[in-house]
Picture (cartoon, rainbow, N blue to C red):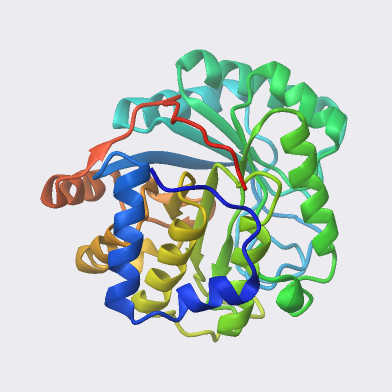
Length: 327
C-alpha cells in the first residue's frame, strides 16, 4: 500500500508532473494498484436541485446571473422529485448522489431545511449523499452531518495564484475555510478543480500542492476539463488535450494515493480510448447520467458499455478503505 504524505513540496510535485508521460502513467498505475482494487470505479450522479441565478462571477459557469448563456433557471426542486431522481440513479448503478445548488453560500432558511430533508431521504435510499452548495459555516456543516450527509464538494477550481483571473466574488481563503468547516464536522471532503481556463502548468501543480498538503487529503478529487459555454468569459477556450488530463490525474493519484480521483466534466468529448488512458493513470470515479448540473454528459448506457469493454467494475457504496497516518 502506498504511503500517505501531506508535506509535499511544490518542486517534488513538479518533478512528478513533468515526468515522461508513459513513465508517469506507469508510476500512477502502480500506486493505484497498491491503494485500490484494480479496475474498480465509483459511479456517481450529480443533480442540479437549484439552477441559475448565482451572484458569483466564476468565469466558467453558465449559472452565473451576470452571463447570458440561455440557461433556464429554476428554484429549489421539491423533495419528492429529488428523491425520485436519487432512486433512479441507484437503479442505474450509481452509489453516490450529489445535489448541487447555485448559491453563493448556504443560508439558514426554509430552503436549507428542505435540503436537510433531501439529505435524510437520499441517505435512507442507501446512497452516499453529497452536496455542493457554496460556502458553508461550521454550524451548517454540523446540521448536514446530523441529517446524514456523507460528503460535501467545494472545489478550489485552480491555484491561489491564478484564482483571481477566474473568480473575484469569493476569495481562495473562503474556499479553504469551507473545506475546513466540512472537515471539522466529520464530513468527507470532495475538492478538485478545472483545467483549460488559461492557467499555466505551474498553476495546475499549485492546486495539487494545496490539496495534497491539507492536514488530511480530500477523500475525493474531481479533475474537470473546462466545458466552454457560450456567453461565459471563457467561451473561446479550446478543449484541453487528454494528455493534460492524464498528467493531472496521474499526479493527483501519486500525491494522494487513497483519494478517489474523479474523471468529471469534459468526458462527453472524450472517446473511450481517451477515458481508458485516464483510468490507467489512476482515475477511479466518474459522474454518470445525461447531465453534470447543466452541461451534457455521457448516458448511463454508454458508460456501462464502456465498463464492459474495459473490464471495469462499479464500486459499492460506503466502502471503507484501510487508513494510514499522514507524515
